[in-house]
Length: 162
Image (cartoon, rainbow, N blue to C red; front, top):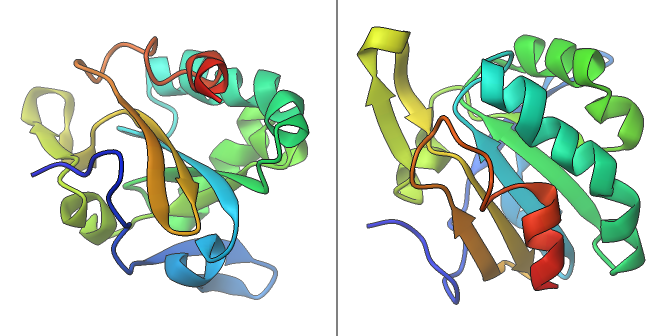
């Protein structure tokens, strides 16, 4: 069953690429006592993710900051090396968006947002969504019906809900 508004996020460990290599990020510690946007994409460098979803949060980062959002996190079932390169290629890193890898898709599976699309080479990937999390509880949850669209889960759509 997919996570929904009012649910507490499960404990999860994601990975980012730091100066010394891959670093574990305890999601519970990252979101505790904070207002955080988490958005997820089916894959780094994939068409809709690269040209629409990440850019929507780059465009709206300042507006989220003005609304009291402490951090915006992009999650994808990729490795941290890819996520770092993708953050640099899209301008997400320069905009201050945190790029986290869910390398084994354990977080994605735990919140019921995993899917497979073998013809596209996407196995155990994340469905596209955006959520606002306040002190570990989902207060807004905007999942897309199709992984190839970015309307409901775009930065502007979530921003309009705040």
